[in-house]
Length: 188
Image (tube, rainbow, N blue to C red; front, top):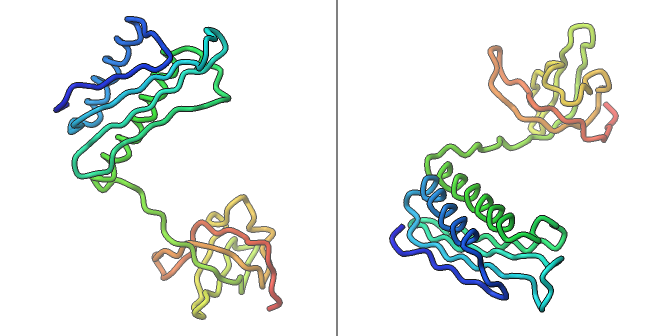
């Protein structure tokens, strides 16, 4: 890290254990994002004079070159484990680590891109042979096998059913994968 970690505490007098945990977590983050330039940590203790039952909040801002800052703001009113500062700190840093890993994967081009789904209408169902055909919006016919229909719905498909699917190039031409029945039926 190019600049020292900045740590602030609000409504809370930190223990050595909490300071040590923050230092360990920031060192751990550098393994996942070696190009981190700065890290700001704010730990806010329970408001008021209550010692028990209040929840800790942890905010992180991590700067990395050539991408937007990683920001974590852990303010969960329904997370009883946040009654403990160490648990709140660990969860915030875990969330930051996941964001950094996602950013690193994106930079390497490893992010999975989902193919867009097409809409079509079932034109033939050959039940004994476990396949059929879908007519696309532009009038082409696309082969569909029983295994490509999600949720075991092949046996419920009827001619005229509207479906969503992803078109792929098969051995013998275009074929449908990830076929979803939309619940609509048109007369053939």
